[in-house]
Amino acid sequence: MSDDRITSYAEAVLSVAAAEANGGEVEDEMFRFARAVEGSDDLRMTLSEPTIPAARRQQIVEDLLGPQATRATVGLVSMVVAAGRSADLGRIADKVVELSASRRAKAVAEVRSVIDLSPDQQTRLATALKSATGKDVEIKVVIDETLMGGLLVQIDDEVIDGTVRTRLKQLREAF
Image (spheres, one colour):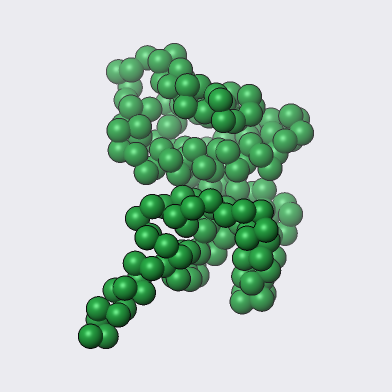
């Protein structure tokens, strides 16, 4: 899908989220769901499969998101899936986050962690990242159990790798 279409979908999502008065929540839920879809080959293929009727793909989204997300998020993700754009869901979610952060004059830090970070941990991390980068930072947490522990942070093109996996690799190489 062209960048213009990705941007159009993202702007539509932000417009609906603003009208629902829960933009930050919709943005976060959509981001997390897109990362979950990217992390599951079966789910990604199922939601992208053109032979599965759109209504069935939407039902899958509603079953997965329904109890955990706002109605607006469920409706917006269902719309993207029904339009046959589930393969672009990650790019759309990234653009939503990017546009939203840009409107608030912040950079987005994608933080991969084995566990979800508490609001206090996110605030402390945002403060530390601001000191390190000089940018106001908005944290988006992605749960990644392959890390073993620690954090992997990406802000724009900059990556800060403080994961246990990387530390162990460095120790192996040192020996």
